[in-house]
Image (cartoon, rainbow, N blue to C red):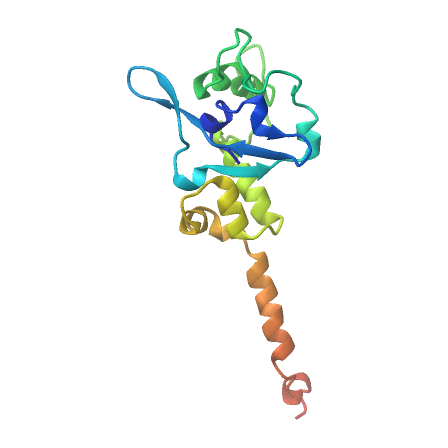
Length: 183
């Protein structure tokens, strides 16, 4: 649910292993001359997002409070380009099998070309499809307004509309002549 620039800026101290909360309050920004640490993209970008305890358990949190949560082997921040080259592309290559002549034999991607940002979109979509209210998803995503979430992902959350139809169905009186064609 976090932007890549926010994930790269997380520190060990941003994670609360007792609650599963991850505090997002900074992001890396490219200034044209180099990278600097600053606030997230939007005002609402400063937030706490709960992460499954199973995920928290996979993190190395027994390090200094100010240590980067995710870092390269050299201890530098993982930025989008590094993540793309060193983790994302290798993972995608595992999903496509090519023969000795360069022909695709198996394409588990179905011809799609996802980007690392797809991970953020997937997290947002899964929450909406799981019935999490859109305003909660919007806040967790750090969108500046609910409208942003609604415009981009609103078509996914059909659960509320389906439930609303059932509310109407329960209120509409059953008409006998519609049920009995002889009347």
